[in-house]
Length: 329
Image 1 (cartoon, rainbow, N blue to C red):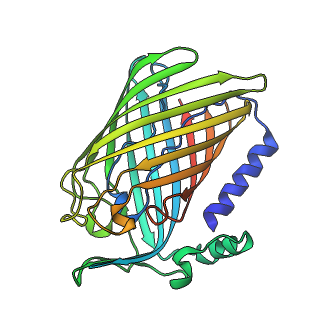
Image 2: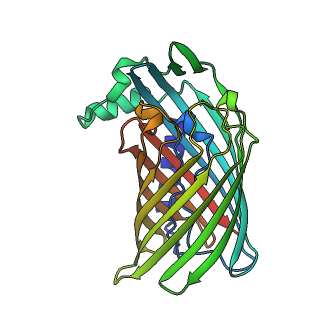
Image 3: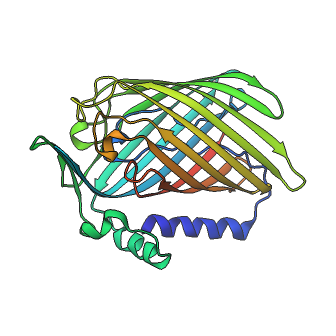
């Protein structure tokens, strides 16, 4: 709950000060925070518009996911009950008008959390289905996968640590006042720990094509963006016997900025399955809807707030809260 309170306080501060600074509408960089998926590095929705030459951008984000799923199918059983906190420090540097380099360094924590009762009450208030939460104890940690009566994954104690470092290089393919396209390459280094579910103990490589279009309006501006990525996942040590070698993902989003200091965004992300399994949590494609927006905190600083929902049930966390701050130097 501390993350939610912090987000609300920042929102109130921004609305009270009402800064008047132009705000760039950028995609959400969505990741599937399911413990078995988090260690893999699929392409994220980087902006199709690179920053001006010589610009350095620093970003810090927090993503808090609540897991509550319980499934069995034939010879497989899985329990995902707990919370995951992902803190990411990122940097981007525009070498010139066409090349940008950067990195993302994550820190990951898996624990029992404290959001179960809040989410259940929210579902009850709006008469939404509570899924598998009614079958699982509140504020509990249990990530367990069994196959053929063998336990292949089990985590029931709090773990945390550095995740897998992501190195990025981007190329501006085309750009004008309204349309832009870019190519983004990512190399993931195995700095995390598969036993702690903070990494996959393998090198990953991804390549993504991104495009966007801005549309001037009588009141503010609108933006549309999309992208398609492919990833080689290396030799993962997380459920290695069933891990896929390749994965693909795509995203499509839209935003509206009615004033210079605020923007509203909606984004849909789809990801192919990362494992060969009959269970939805492992073997089905994930579809995630993220809603939220940005607030300008100053000429070069912005705050991003979002909430993610699993449109394909049990393929990603039931709910994910996102908070991020970006500053340009």
